[in-house]
Length: 124
Image (tube, rainbow, N blue to C red; front, side):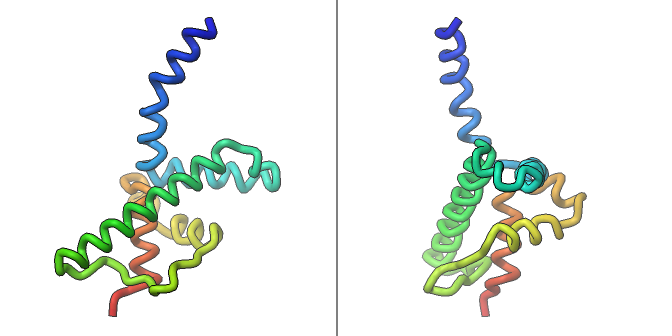
């Protein structure tokens, strides 16, 4: 029985890892809302790590896209300060929740994060 469970876990691991870096916005917000309701106990939830990894992966992908656009001579979608970007979870979630529901249904976390970066750090 343990062997079967282990095989299933290994078989599903790549799918889970792929989904963690391409999560639908509605799913992200549902998990974030559930974590908020847990209060301090949210720190012990596996979803906390999942959401953190999702944001880190989205940030890395957006940075790579921005640098690739600059290297190709195209205007980047956003222009963050050289010293780096600082945002807290409250600001990010507030922006994500401000996106109309119809758009959230078709949007990935990376796209929502891009929209925040474009709004907060426009290129001048």
